[in-house]
Length: 202
Ligand SMILES: [Fe+2]
Image (cartoon, rainbow, N blue to C red; front, side, top):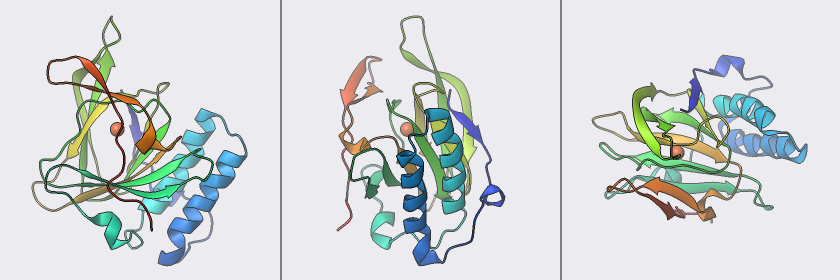
């Protein structure tokens, strides 16, 4: 089960940057956090506060990173730490689009910027296989979720809008597009996948 709450912009500390400064300021603050060698609970706690501050304003995301795909949700890389310690990705969802049941294998934070997303939660059975457990929550702009093998790593995510796009900003503790991960296939078996990216910054 993923951990979720409704962290809001009101909890974000520090001076308010301009629209053009928001994302560079977010990356700089996250880099400082990672440079400190913060442990996972600290990364999730302080990273959540930073991400909540970023997604509290929908005025900074480049149009190129807000493009949808017709066939499935899109994943646009926004920033890759030069040392590969974290990455930031824009996920763009059209109506009806959803992920398979999947894991991440590293810590992650998901903040909704635009629209709404439904997160269906999983528990592991006696054999360690993920099962949808019937619990779901809808995330709206400003909401932030955490995932990791420690706090709960399996879920299925879909657009919660019947029309229009939904966009969320994801932060992961690795270059997530290159990470070997797992998903549940239609026949119930766990299979490997590597997500890649639909676009990377110029
Ligand atoms: Fe996910």
